[in-house]
Length: 176
Image 1: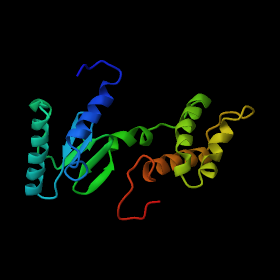
Image 2 (image 1 turned 30 degrees about the horizontal axis):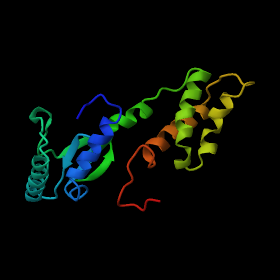
Image 3 (image 1 turned 120 degrees about the horizontal axis):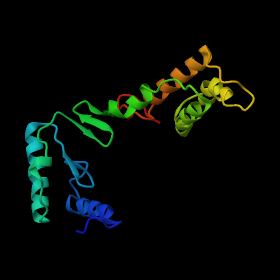
């Protein structure tokens, strides 16, 4: 396949989905050229390896050994950590929100509120939580960072990193 064409990734993804049809979600996960082979036990894992490798061989697809990682207990994949415990958010992805310093200017605050507002439908009582911050962006107000602003800012960061916005929903709780 000629890489560099605008539709090459989509074509390759379709090829991978076709080659591994019937195995995805049962034995493996596929995204473009990334394949994660899973198994509940070591024996099941080996059987799934065999199935996937046979399909790849039949399709005349080759693997690059230096890009392969075998028998991992935990894998970072598309912004999530996949392990025997399930799927959770990769801390590196939420780190930017957790470490976000409080805004120093109206422009910084608008940038922060832009990100938060994008996810507002996932945060209960978002408008009440963000009210002190929105007041600072009004044309007639002076930018005076108060205790209420700090509380509002920290509660928004907390809401974004704990609700199922930037995190993956837990299976032991009801998810709506």
